[in-house]
Length: 367
Ligand SMILES: Cc1ncc(COP(=O)(O)O)c(C=O)c1O
Image 1: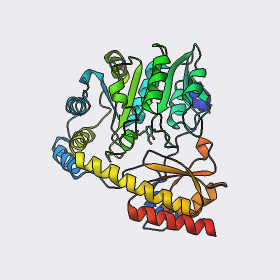
Image 2: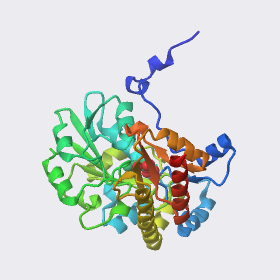
Image 3: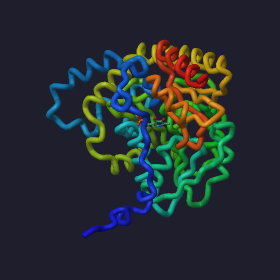
Image 4: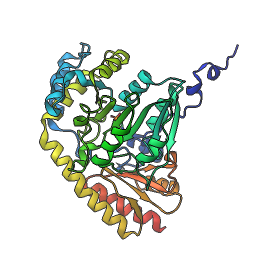
């Protein structure tokens, strides 16, 4: 007896293409039998973890048999102290991807729509489609979000708008004035999700701090992550900040133990390790200079980025270049899935990783 199980799945799920993550180092080792590989493909922190985070995890090991605190009291306290928030505004997530999914499951269904920009983070279409809602894609301006186009894409079915600031995969940003004017114009029954996964790299006076804006905009939900500048990608922990009514709704949908004890302990430790964050941001700024200089010297174009990665225009199909780089032991990210087939996204690494990438790139584009 056979059955068409695909036909049994929810219609949005039938059309879903799974998320393609950056290639893991171990996978490339297995495939090519090479070692000494560097991965600059997933916008991870090249510094390695904060020693304080490691110590916090070691201390937590004795509690391995216990369920985590499902309300994440300690971490919410630490977040609220650090960012001047009320714990009732905070929802914890298994990475910020978990929160993006939670928000869509809470507010979207097959009768309504989400708007986001062309070249927006690839998880937005995935989570929207999974719940059977419709995605409306607004055209980008010079690879960045065009808030005017996003406004024009709103219909009476729009329930959510996703904006990443800085955006992945382009690294482009929206200034505070522009964002606030946009938020002022959005009706209160349309929720704006401001995804600030890379905000720590782009802290300057012209940039909005979404966490401070939540008290002015009851329809704003800001997501942050510990995966990037805080260096905890493996642990999966992030948080959303919103008005307490929305927070309550998100917590009704949230799995009770979605964030594990080690992740929460390490996240608290990272919030207390301001030196680590400062070092991370400084290393990124130096690496960004090193990479942009090297890219310019090769005569290649790139999208100016405020995040911890840079997207390079290879001027030709970038997939063969990506594959040749793999043979040099360098993993970066091809962007065909973002409809940017000529571009490669490269995470800013340590100085030696950046040098290695530039040498490998020079070699493969010359042969
Ligand atoms: C814009 C953006 N948002 C959210 C995420 C999700 O990160 P995490 O689930 O690790 O918090 C990423 C990860 O690459 C991202 O680039």
